[in-house]
Image (tube, rainbow, N blue to C red; front, top):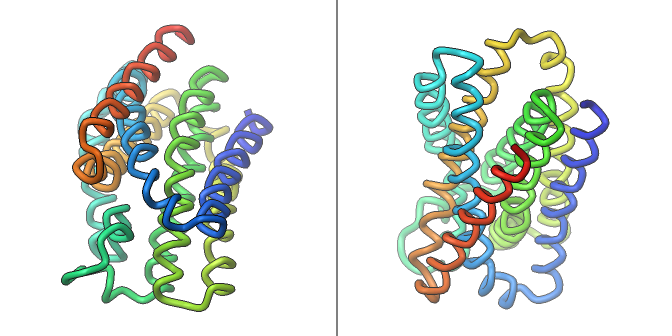
Length: 244
């Protein structure tokens, strides 16, 4: 479990780094097509949370619904206090935006914490089973690529290029760090405790999809975004069925 969690969380971190490189290479092009990647990731995350994480958690603990709700609200409150990092912020820079008032270190803190949670979700998935870990890692990896684009683009607006690059790489490394930190406590959890962790992960995925990714589907070429969401949902659902 430990080796798989580290390997796949490392791949997720590499996906974030790929997003950073895309901005370094061609920022406008990366931002233009990140809509479609976000839309695909939205469909995948929603499907995994609703079709796999929540049902699996329900079989391990009776408090699944309450934990999912509490997790969703907790991430909302955390983001409200720290920083909103929706991809919309980098596509539309005119007009009043709360993120425009946020300082770079504050934005970095929110994104770093979010990547830590992604690593935690991957570790929880592999604690359940190898197949479950692959599903969790796949969903995180899909989200990490546009997150790398978002991270670097947001920080570039507020600080020197070198500093923004260093902090963005730290965000990429946070995913494997989060997985490593989670592996110790997960080894001693009961079935009920593992179910609670899965429910927390489901709440995290639902919040990311609803707050960060779904808004992207209303920008750019909306019909293509809709197709990307549906494609992400269908492919994830088929993957869940095949692995089951």
